[in-house]
Amino acid sequence: MRLAVPVKAISQRFALPVLVFASVVMIILGKADALLFERIRIIFADAAAPVLAVVSRPAAAVDQLVDRVQDFFALYSENNQLRQDNARLMQWQQLAQGLSVENARLRELLHLAPDPAISFVSTRVIANSGGSFVRSVLVDAGRSEGLARGQAAMTGSGLVGRVTEVGEHAARVLLLTDLNSRVPVAFDGSRERAVLAGDNSNRPRLVYLPEVSAVKIGDRIVSSGNGGIFPPGLPIGVVAAIEDGIVRVEPYAELSRLDYLRIVNYGLNGVLPQPVAPRAVKPRGSAREAVGREPAP
Amino acid sequence: MRAIVARRREWSVVRLVPTLTTLVLAVFSVLPLRFPDYAAVAPLITLGGVYYWTMYRPDLLPPAAAFLCGVVVDLLSGVPLGVSALVFLFTRAVVLPQRRYFVDRLFPFVWGGFTVLAAAAIAFLWLLGSFFEGAMLDMRTVTLQWVLTVASFPAVAYLLMRVQRAVLPPP
Image 1 (tube, rainbow over the protein chains, first blue to last red):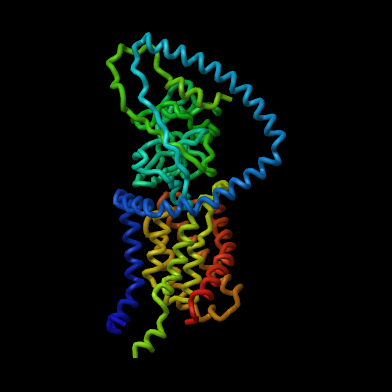
Image 2: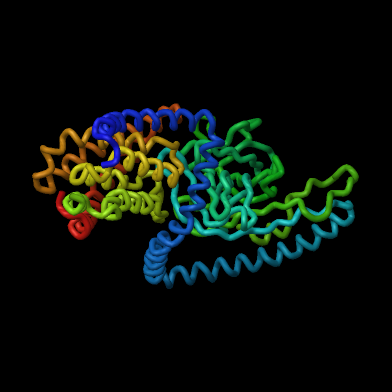
């Protein structure tokens, strides 16, 4: 009853049109100047992160329960499968250890600088993205845990996306499949470079390929390390289809069932690279990573 | 004089209940449920909340509150800011004049009204999304989202009805 009645009536009449106008302006501004809204969005995500983290736990618990029930029914066959996998992986481990030793000796011979140190930050996914507009997730780690814009996000299987907005305690990860995602990649065997572009479908496509005809289904795609933010050699996916000259990649990671993500902190801290003699052998990423990778099918 | 005025208005906290419940729905709408492709077809439960409160207590969910809830949904889900706000304001603009035909009817009638509203809202989101991407979005995904949204409404309405009966006195 504080406002005089006529003023209140006018403000009520105009509230709706004014707010509609404000919404339209925000949508247009959001497309024009993405940076300002990113900042607003991440400040809000920071504030909401504790609530989201708590609220998403029951859902995660239910998921785990469902998984456990399913696992129980598949126990026998899964056990067999795991035994076979284990035997195969032990062989790979032996091989990898031998390669690692050989790699170290060769690098020493060539006086190569050591790779920058890689460390991971483990985070949990606390919120999903908004349907068909954007494919991203919120994770519960931020600047205070060492996250920075552009860092790679992975699961155990492969690359999931990159960090786009960072707050103090929360961060947004743009998935590989999002329309705006562009990741520099390379083919595992030939080291040919390309860019993995998402288009809001489940299988992002490869663009800027020098030669589409040289690509085969089953080719392994890894990160190329171009741009210096992603470490080279991170597993991304396999070429799954080539139709009408468009190459589609099936990511290794299951992007619809994300629970825990590792954010890769690819630091250039430590030894500065010494000037080296022209390299005869191009390094294939570190053999340390090979032990963690899945063996080729 | 003051005593009479005090009895006509409810406590201020109680007046915030519709806005608060809608905000709770917004938080729950971005929960990461691990079904394949869930994010693309997640039901718009916040829309159900805005529809319910505009139907039964429009005085407690004014345009400003609908706008605020829309902004919160946009911020949480990574959608361009203002899109959900526009949808919720549109909901209020459409539902308010039609209220009197629905308020005294049984629930299935109200649910039917929501079905139509959800179709319009999702069609608008589909148009906007197609416009931003420069290509038509997948029709099946959109249809499934509509079905899930409509199917989620009874649960949302039931919860909000319990809250309304428990906390808010009849208008």
